[in-house]
Length: 374
Image (tube, rainbow, N blue to C red; front, side, top):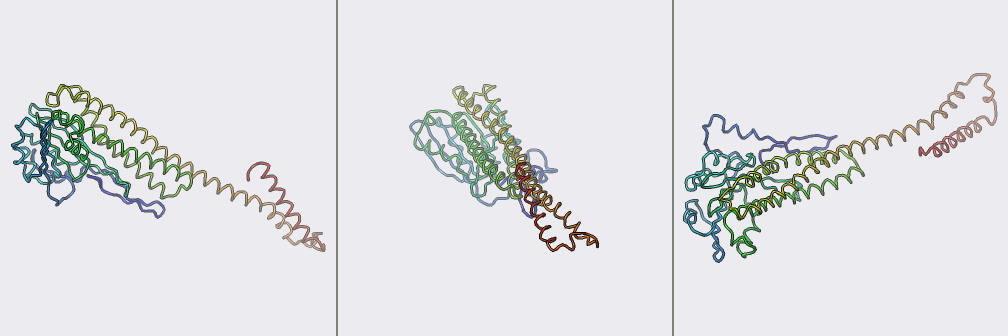
C-alpha cells in the first residue's frame, strides 16, 4: 500500500501491470477553501480505533498501560520520569485536537500530522521539538514497499509518537525498555527520540537490501529470458526507487538541523548519537544512488538482451535464406523448360542437378563454419 498513490494499468504485449504512481494532490482537494489550521485527515479512509499506549520509566521504575484519551496522559507530563506516549492512528480529529490542547502544539503542526504526504521536517520551539519522518517496510509476499508517516513531539521528559497504522516497527524499543537493556532507561527523552529515529533509519537498510536482491534476480532473468513480464518488473522497480527518494532525502536536512543547532530539549549528550544516525543516512543515500544507477542499467541490459535475441533470429533467417538463394537460382534455370536445353533430354539430368544442389549446400555449410557464422 502506497499512501497518496494510485495505480495505473500498463500493458506489455498482453501483460497487465499495476504501477504505483505518485499523486500527492488528490486528497488535498478536500482542503480547498478551508481556512488555515483546519484539521482534515488526508490519508486513506480508516475505521479502526486509535490505540494510545503509555510507557513511563526511569532507571528503576517501569510502567506500561493502554489508555482511551489524551487527557489520561497529562498526569505523566510533569513527573521526573520519562514518558513515551505512543499513538497508533491519526485519523480521529478529536484526539489530534486534544494533543494541541494539552501539549500546546501549534495547530499548523497538527495539520501536518494529519497529512501523510507531508515531507520530513523539524520545528523547534521552547516547549517541544516537532519532527515528521517516514518509515518504510518491505512486504516479501507482495514484493511491495509500504510507507508510513511518523510524527514525534519531544518535550523535556516526554515523547509523543504518532503513527498511521498499528505497525511493529518500535517493538524492539519497547522490549529494551521492558527488559532495561542498554542505556535507554538511564537516559532522557532526547535519547528515546534518537532511538525511535535510529530504528526507522535502520529499516531503510532492510528495504534497500531487498530491492538490491530483486535487482540481481531481475538481471539474471533478463539475461536468460528478456520477456515483457520482466520489463514490467523493472518498471515497478524504477517507480519504487523514485518513491524512496521522497522520505529519505529530506530526512538528511532534518538531521543536519539537529546537529547544527543546539537544541536543549534533545540534550547535549545525544548529539553524538544523532551524528551516528546521520552517518547511517549518508550510507543509505549512497546505496539509493547505486540502486538508481542499477535500475537504469537494467533497462539497458534488457534492451541489449532483446537486441541480441533479435540479431540471433535475424542471423538464422539470413542463413536459411542464403542457403536457398543458389538452390532457387539453379531450380529457376532448369525450370524454364526451353526446347534446346541439353539437360532436359539427359537420363541422369535430374539426379545430377540434385547432387549439384547438395554439393552447393555442403559447400556453403563449410564456408559458414569457416567464417564462424554457425
